[in-house]
Image (tube, rainbow, N blue to C red):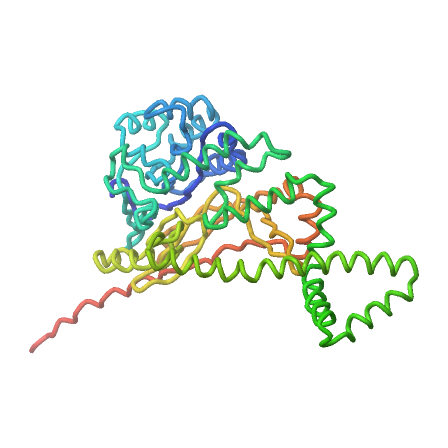
Length: 446
């Protein structure tokens, strides 16, 4: 823990995911990151900046190998590297590898190249720092994720499942993104959990890529689907002679409005017919799908989900670290892109979140319209500092306007009106210092 001091203040960020093929090289939060480094540079505190993994998206480079990726980063982001150099003259900057930039631990040249920019690259799985009379454990968190765990740390050829997903899917998305009606496919990195990928793709196709005439002609049917499904069932009862009153009453009511009522009746009949057809087809497909899933589970073809539980593995890891090193009371990680702070037996665990765009799913209130993935930014640095009463941990928010106006269609904004996400950060937390034992009184004998 060289360089630690009782009054040192730690700022922690992670999951910047800088770099990648073609469209992935765009860093939308770069002005905010440069301003953050400038603020640290002018800070009067004794500061250490810890970049806790996935600073760079090295997995997303598929046309260059090894140390060549660093050279591409230098050429693409000269202002960022210059800012690191200037800030590093007065602030200690420590970089820990994650899974997306595990190669930083695989080539010794990276340590020297980053050192030229005053960045101390530590090619280890975790580091520790003292704060007051307590200690902090830092790790990126991917080693707790069976789909992204590096089995042979430091081996550039150690490629977990997540590596193939990012080199085959994410990097490909970066290469194809600008071919769409809107440059949206590059946001594939922001889709979490991974299981939402098919739904997200369908949502963006419907709201962005589908022919507008086709989309707007489908909207009324999709909005009225729930009502149409009920009417389809009632129409079936009418045809069977079981219960005809609802259909007769509806027809009589609309008949009062002349041509307008006739047009509404025609539209309703069309909707009911399509809804009835979907119901008839959907019922057997539902049972077939359920039976296929049971069969797949029985054979154990898919034993795990694509994404890791965002809490349980880290709670277990934090409890283990606290038990092994009682002075450690803070378990700081990233990887899951979800800013959080929670108590664990022996201390707290805190996730620093991500600087990537975040996508919030908003399902339709009525009908069967595809969900809308509402974009926002939740930029922050976690500040950890000793105080007279203990150690304070807090999220310092970095404001960046939501890109919803530019990125969502009018239809998406209309269906999410009043339901816009309002991301919040955890409250400030104080880890109280352990009271020092009083010195034993000396017994004076006469």
